[in-house]
Length: 181
Image (cartoon, rainbow, N blue to C red):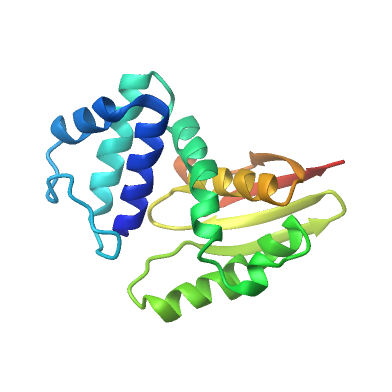
């Protein structure tokens, strides 16, 4: 996981829950990095999961909810780094259809070692879009939060749910996006 994600998580925690909680999360976990994250370096995923687990326990917030909220927070940061075509997308649906074929392709050009989830699309009809998420990290809840953050960016109202999830043994997560009027 890129250090930039850890840096954003630190900002998220400090802005919403204070510096002390972030410090405790680092102190109460055995982290190979010792909690020092450089944005461009790669760190072990296990560190992110340990920090998230600790935060979930201390805040008494289920991990999926915490990760989803962090995804919403993270979206503006990632959007500022997106290719112009994505930043200028006319709608949320158009933007979401660009994730795997444009945004992730551009990320891979800049960082050949980036370990990105794969998205495909299972259904695109009227008010619904199904995004099929695959990743060994199983951070589908982060993707849900990013989608909700994108909806805010595009000033659109959506509902997000999962019909199947890798956390329950499915081959992929089916993230169903319903576009509300």
